[in-house]
Image (cartoon, rainbow, N blue to C red):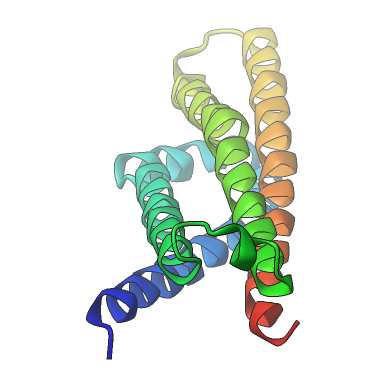
Length: 171
């Protein structure tokens, strides 16, 4: 038994499962509910941010990616061309690339949009006029829609990554 591989597989699979769980839940369940809730979603968004949800999801993703890269390095003999050119190597590396792109989109599109929407939502009660509030809500909803669209793309990329890695051994 190779304890190094066992630990890396454990980290990769557990944190990857948590990451994809959030990646599917947030854009397909949570965001539609928050958009439907309108201004009442502000305190929920603020609470999720204060509890560190964006940082937790980023940490899950980072641990999964790092453990996966170390695993691929180990099983491929240092990214050896013979392994990397095999059906299994191509499937694993394509899945890995898909997960890395998902992480990049999550960090550069989804997270900033959700953070800004949360900040703007917190300021809604302090706005004086209905026109200011309506303008702020329009901006918040646009940010939430952008975050949800990016989140759906992340979810699809991660589903592809999981599928590629699940079948790689059998190709």
